[in-house]
Length: 430
Ligand code: 5AD
Ligand code: SF4
Image (tube, rainbow, N blue to C red; front, side, top):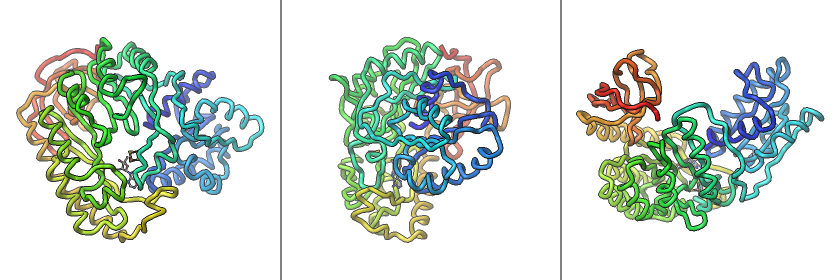
């Protein structure tokens, strides 16, 4: 989402006559877009930006700004730790950046805007992404779920969906620029709703755009996976057979305290229904370990759910206490660091094994791959992704280039990657 938001900011600034610099050293204005979801991300941003202080003193840099969720969440901390900052702008204030920059260039003071509108959708802005054949389109912003550990509802505000017309316009303009794969984004993408159009209907509408080959969406909330959504994933060939469905914990007691709105059985039966309807589907997930009060038994339930759900891959996190959240107010962050890191190690090791199992089923199959880049290690190899979002490294037929859709025979699996050989010349991007 922040990649998309940075492109939005680039769109807003280019509309005001600014151009992208070719490097940090060349830039007169440096803006860093940030995430506040875990404390580690905040520390990383502060460390990184501290290094910019000398550049601001010595070099061309006239404006140093921080954008996004950290200014929204902890503006005082940023001002204290990075006193040379000129701009602080929260996720709803990007359209104000041109005037904030102008003002700061004039008065050399800090300009700050962290007003949450709860409605800002940037409908009128056309983002300015790097040239690519794969692109993001944000279709809804904010979140109303208030999972007890999460800052998103506080830093991004209430859930709101973009109009179907403006989403479609953006998709068409990307496809005209040779984009063939689009990922629709939202904190809670499957609660998209605008004037009678829900996510399933929107996917159907967008898939009708000629020239678009693959359509993805993320991130889904388990409670909002509808039967229509499952039905259209099963029946519309442009909608990729991949679902990112965070489960967060396998224990009912923890899920309740996380305010996730489902039980482990409900989660597992959703997965079962989806797999029945879409047998080729790959499911990925997010999981948090070390949530307040997580007992050994609770943690065992998490491992057990992972074994049952057979995820392709998982993003695994140690619980990070965040100011302002219900978990911080109501529970004590009582799991010792060592236990948290041990649990993270255990989920990682288990997932590594499960990923390899899932990947190994691919051996011998022929899969369509969207080629992305030349492999880092060998020039005669390319890297791409299957519809299931699995990474494939393959020996290419001469002439194949990034953006091509080609068929690859999968020969082996290693870690979370597949390896194989291209079997046909396939088709160009468009
Ligand atoms: N601590 C650790 N992980 C978190 N996530 C969200 N908030 C926290 C937190 N406070 C994780 C969830 C979510 C992903 C984007 O980040 O797993 O799905
Ligand atoms: Fe955060 Fe929960 Fe909303 Fe996801 S659904 S953004 S975890 S509050």
